[in-house]
Image (cartoon, rainbow, N blue to C red; front, side, top):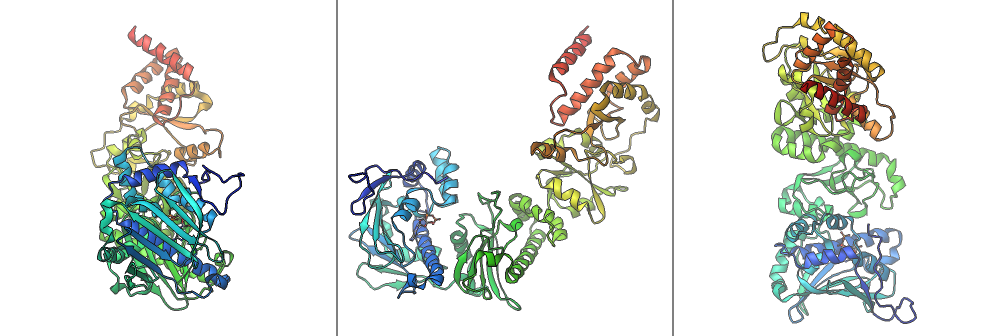
Length: 639
Ligand code: ADP
């Protein structure tokens, strides 16, 4: 993604990398596009540039504090992490300085020349080329460091990596290239100096900046000071980690801004969980459920991004084991009192403390989801559309909370416009119905038109429409809910005659059915091994035919998924069901009774099978034969 290194435009004489002269390098191509959009953005909340730069400064302090745990020399003599903002009206600049980890030359090229951050890369990938749409996307993603170019005509970074002697200056006007040269900086850390455009000079007002810091960055756990050039610095934020404060003292705005900082997301959190667990183990958690799908939700690593802190010190946000993969949509932090500060990833993996925290988080999150589902169904449906598919992985993975998860599940259904729960479904079951009917496939609207549903619809029996691939795995595994078995309607064995329908049952045309014997025999003879059986259907009302799986065979959709993943080579033979009330079937039955060997019956048999396959979204058995037969039958119809 971000592997294209910045290319050297001008290199110092002799072709060798210069360490004394300024070098001008081009931005990675995607970067230039991004900067162009940022610079011309009409984005109304330009002030968030300050939030982004402070957020980076805070991360830099966190990273050094963490690295200094094992290499204390890195923080030598100055372990009071802080962020200082200086406004210079005459020079029209705002400078944001931190004493965090800093950057060396390679860091600068990598971090500020290419798209280092995966969120930014996702942003660039989603660009449409339509200026208006792209501008509104910036609001959704936030673009970190580069947002400085919303207000600046040039930006300079003077930085020195902790533990290294040389400082570097990076500067750019955001128009295609940047310059790197050696510089002076007394101590480690970074200073980002933003030279404001004339239109944006309003940000030079100290009170305005103070308001912006309060609004977006109050939660930053390091002191942020504000000063005019040569003036006395004043602290502008509270400076204590937000999660250590009592819930009653934290405002909704502060939670939101912390969420933006910690999650790199720009939406509103859908839910906030802030708690302190005391007892055998002691930890605090501040967790968020986003209201939007994070771009990386379905990445193969299925890793949680929740950050681990130990006694206020940031440790890692990789492979913490704090959150199971099926809750990976959570964002936020966990701060443990019990883990050692030098805890390694390996130690975290099978650590009883981690396991206890994970168990605690799962219980809290499920409790919160249950509460929200009960309090506001519509809002919960919104959550479900974003994250239901992920949560269902938890059922399949044998989480101890399987029953609670199944109860939380929501589905599209033939009986309602919105989403329904299994409890809703059971509440609406018909007299004599003791199974939960469902159909699975790619898309609910197509499923709702499946011929297999016709008989259920005629009787007013609700069918759940399942469209997440994971459904085909967890449903057969769970088997039943409240002692009602799940039953796929694409499978034989559903006896609809036992169930009292909403409408009057049509009188059973028993005599007519027995008349179908010769037709059934003729179709079976023609199709041979291609079908498992031919049966008279009670599930069809409008369509002439449909395919179903045998009662003990694999579900049709499941089989298709396995074939798509090359887990299965051959499609298994299906049962062809025919509709005794359909005019075509009635006519064919009559033909078969008169002459069981009539040649038209063989063509009809194949056309019926192919029709059923088309309805199922499968290719016809043999396209050439199909076309030949269809033409023949049509020609005969005309004659
Ligand atoms: P993000 O902060 O989300 O990773 P940015 O585009 O804002 O994305 O920054 C890119 C990278 O530049 C950061 O990941 C970090 O490595 C580096 N960086 C930015 N600001 C600083 C800073 N003040 N100190 C040290 N490194 C920084």
